[in-house]
Image 1 (cartoon, rainbow, N blue to C red):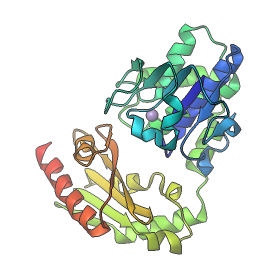
Image 2 (image 1 turned 90 degrees about the vertical axis):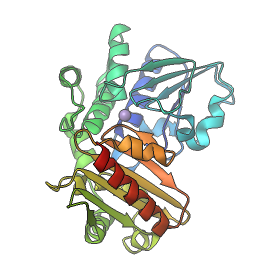
Image 3 (image 1 turned 180 degrees about the vertical axis):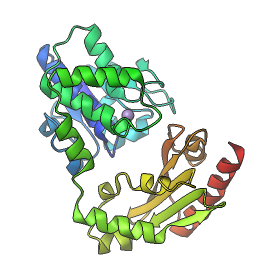
Length: 305
Ligand SMILES: [Mn+2]
């Protein structure tokens, strides 16, 4: 069985994929986990993270399982490995952007894929080990921002309590994911805040990080994790956006919003996707052009919500 998840994997993507892999091991099903990117530094503590590869060892798997994935292009270079699978199961909580897979277990009201996976494991009477519990907790803690985001549900807290009971290591999850920044990351954050611009009576905050910024801070794209939220923490700000060009040619954009402001619609306008309050897209344009197109759409979004 081949397990996959999205590129630029976060705690929910890797936590869910690894928990699934641990479960399959437990029931004696041979499996592999693939992802386009290597795990970011702050997720290398996840139990079983060493099993993650950029390409599978086996040439063909009968069954594929994709976790936390809303469109097949987010599989990156791992997409072809799922093509020979006879069936592909998708377990996800994103608003469907595309609908890959043959059997789709989707709940857009679940704050994390790990919540959906926990329900399935519970219904299967699976023995959730401390390693699996830590992986699932990492998913829930990441996607709820440590239970601070609006998507946090009573169920996600009840499940988290059960996972703690099962030996999940919440301290490791919190410290590794949120309190283990590299020096390069903090330096780059300074640059982002310095370059921040405000629009529409300070209700929109956005910033851009250029290749030069990344080079001078000796930073990589994974060092920008959580940056876009920093701008949303300003009291007047309803929508925040961060454009970044860690390598020449491709500009990535992260969007965040409060309340009803739907940044997923902004992301979709540029071929991306996500959730109402957290979304992303990419631009194949020079930075200046990407900036003006994006800011115009953000203003429309602010005005129409
Ligand atoms: Mn997720």
